[in-house]
Image 1 (cartoon, rainbow over the protein chains, first blue to last red):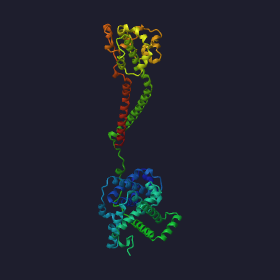
Image 2 (cartoon, rainbow over the protein chains, first blue to last red; image 1 turned 180 degrees about the vertical axis):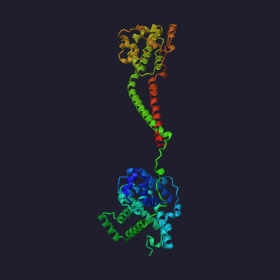
Image 3 (cartoon, one colour; image 1 turned 60 degrees about the vertical axis):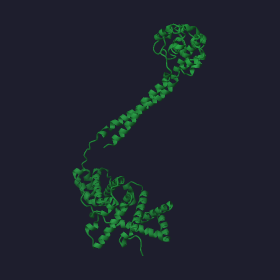
Length: 198
Length: 302
């Protein structure tokens, strides 16, 4: 895929060229939205809106990594959504226990053994609950760092905060996540428990 | 308690940066030394490291469907503006104009208030002098006793009145008493409107009558340059101030013709005027405020 040629064509109004970029990056974009928002429907909406916004504002793309630019766009969409939810909370804690099956790749794609699949699904479920329990500003930084693998500078550019703030928010998010998982240690599969019980 | 939490947060921040390899060599060496000495800190680091590893191992969630764009999705329809939003520019303009007018009027009022106050003072002073002269004339004619004089002066409660009374020699007024009320009405009627208003009126012709007293403290007004009118007319100005009971019964009936007399309630003219001059400013300020609120609302309307 010649990314720069597709971008140039999309800039001149070629929607087919942009759709090739959509097909190439939609999984990454959706994954980020899902990890931040925690539910498939909101993640779908955020992903679709992010692609539409990206196409309409393609002229503002100044080069560099197109994927990073797309991720920044969807992260901003998610951030807006989280702020909206904070003003009008509508999702209860219990709803996280009823996640859609498609959100769990082990249930969708199958796994070597049913027992391992169940353990992995349980862990994934618990981790997603833990991530969703974080405050929005810490959640976005954690997902960008530990799910998307961005470095501090890229996160700072995406969220538009200083690198020092990225470090402190990430540390607080990780510590909260650790405390969350330690408090629910019995829910984790034995091999994933954070504390030695010997 | 608070300090302990803060210290733990700082330590977690260092541990997190240590996991990411974001510590400087000096900081890393210091932390590794602490880790070597403190097993609890090592356990803390290990728990944090495993947490990060768990998150990093989260399986990617594939997109449940394609997010391909269609021409209809990316078309930006021109949204019709709401009526309120269409009014926003006009409201902004009106607010600006109203605000400027309000400021201009405010400044004008403040400026004129500073100029008018000293100019407004002579009006009551002139009346006071007129009253005083009549009072003295009446006293000289024995129709009014000295005990009655204060009541006459009270008709125009100005501070200048006693001073003017002292400055005006009573003998200059005494001879004119017989003319009181006889010629005055016709003379007053002949005067141009506003001639009674102050120093520029009757005294403007060179003869400094009682009404011109504020122009100068010396009482030369009555004894000075010849007046265009007979001197006998001088006290006629005071008739207006003299209550009917102070006029001797021996006077002709015409003497009871009383000119429009300023009542004590009518004296604070300048106060009333200044109050009325501030009303437009207040109204305009309220209008500006209302327009500003409407402008903000109109701009925020979608």
